[in-house]
Length: 333
Image (cartoon, rainbow, N blue to C red; front, side, top):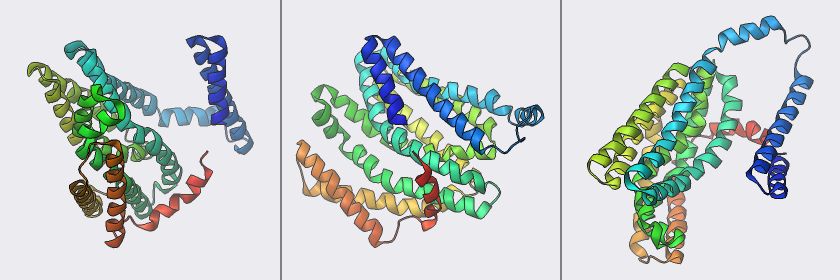
């Protein structure tokens, strides 16, 4: 269905020859998806379960969702767009373009893997809200599996970004590779937090979400303003990566608490994984010295193979409680 709706959007846009066609196509796709959802809901909804009384009770109970979560989403969106606006105004469009490319590349895993895992996680974890042990196991397994696959990728970018970006995107984008090296740890934590954010909805912790969104905007502005004072975009990017990394680490601690766990329990499994990723990439980089694309590709593949061999050999992979999400994955489109 998603392929069909996307095809409708592109077809209408192509036939109309204007941006309005894309808008109309997107609207048609969303209306069609909403219609399918409502038809499924009406078929499965118990007879007589929906009434004005039950609707009013639900609105009173969940009033904080539109009041707090909406503003938190607006602030989060503003925080993600502020760097491009501030950098373009203070340092020029070229610097803003370097940052925009970096954030787009590093955010791709979060938009693909994080959202898919988040849907599966929400579908299963919602049923475990009052089962502390089961929810803790699923939370820790989810974080463990995301870390398992995220660590080699973002560690490699942190090490090889300076050489990777010019080879892939061209010499003009070399500075974006430096930005990627400094922001890779932040985006790694963002990828882990992406599926676990649904715990705040499950536990109804909307108030803290608004507070963290405010801090996100404040840190972004302060970090980039520091770069403006030093007349160096690199200083601003480094301060931005460091500040938001610390904030995201604190936010992950909040998410772990929402899942009845904590950083201590997760770090006991993640720290050896991080050591394996660093060791694997260092050994491969020491053996192969070349800035060519083929060499970088070989280094990435070889380091990933060595990393997973080390993880499997030392039995560092997450617990099998992740299998509890298999039914949710099977139901995903």
